Image (cartoon, rainbow, N blue to C red; front, side, top):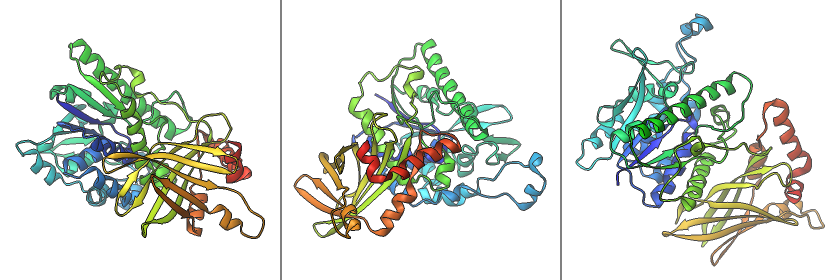
Length: 447
C-alpha cells in the first residue's frame, strides 16, 4: 500500500508536526511520498533532507523564532504603508531558519535521484497564472521553498523570470490531490490549522479565519473531486484537540518549540491508540477542533538524578480555571542522557488533597512504561515553606527519583503562565487573575 504524508500549513506552529513525526517513526510508519504546503514545507524539507525524527525535534529546540523575521531595506518603509511590498522578506528563512533546521535543497534534490527515494512535493503558487504548482523534490530550490512560505502582507513574494511565486495558502493548505495523483492509497494528513466554531474580532484573528476557510474549502474540494472520480483511499488525520497558539504567541515567547513538539507527540499518540484501519470519514469533522475551557497554561520543570546521571522533567500543563469545566491537559518530556529525550504520552493530572500527580507513559527500549510525578503542596510548621513546596517524586517502574525546583524553575513557571480559552484583553486578564489570586496550590486543590 502506497502511503503519503501530507503536511498542512500552520506558520511557525509547525514545530508541533515534528512531535507527530516522532510518534509515527516510533510506530514504524513509512511513507513513499511526502507533501508540504506553507509552513508544512519546513517539516517536509527536514524529512526529505534526511533528518531523523529525533534530530528534527532537537533542531527545533535550538531555533530562534525571531530569525523568521527579516526586515526590508529602509527605503521600502519610507514609501509609506500603501506602497509597502510586505512587512519583511524571506532572507531570514533562507539564511538562518533553513540551516538551523537542517533543510538543504541540494540534499533534497540528491536524495530524490536515488533508486528507492521517497517522493516529495512542495506547493507554491505562481501568482500570474493563479495556479498552485506541486514542485517535485528533484526540481526544488531553496528560494522556491521560501516563496511557498511567504504569506502575503507578511513576506514579499519571489519574483523570478517574469513570474511571481508566493504561499499557496489562499488556494490550498494541504494537497490531497497531489498525493492521489502519485498513487497514494493511504493518506496521513497532519493538520495544525485551526478549525473550531470560534469567530474572533480584530484583523489578526480574521486574517487567520480567512486562512482557515480557504484551507478547509480546498480540502473538502479535494475530497469531492476524489469521490466524483471514484478514487478510494484511506484517510488518517492527526490534529490538536484545541487550536494551537498563533504565531505571535510563539514569536513573543508565550509558547516555545519544545512545548509544541510535546503537544504534537501527545496528539499523535492519542490518535494512533484509537485509530481504525478504515480511517476517517472524508468530511468537515475530520479536522474539527473544540475551544478549550478558560484557564491557564504553565510550564513545570523539575530536576533530579537517576543512577548518578542528571534527569529533567518538563511538563506543559493546561489547567481550566473552574472546577468541572474539563480535564487538565499534560504534555512534555523527560531528559536523561542514557535515554535521550523521551516524550510523554497519555498524560493527565490528578489532585487529591494537597497532592498533585502528573501521570503519563513513556516509550523506552521499544516498550511502554507507566510513570508519575507527584508533588505534595503543603506548608509544614516552621520557616521551610520553600522546601515544602519545591519537591516532587518521580516513580518509573522500579525507579524512585527525588526531584526539586531551583529559583530559576520557579521564576520560569511564573513567567510561563498564559491564558487559554480566553479572548480579548479583558478575558485573558481575568483568566490569569483567577489563577494568581487563588494561587497555584489553591487552584489545584479546588480543581
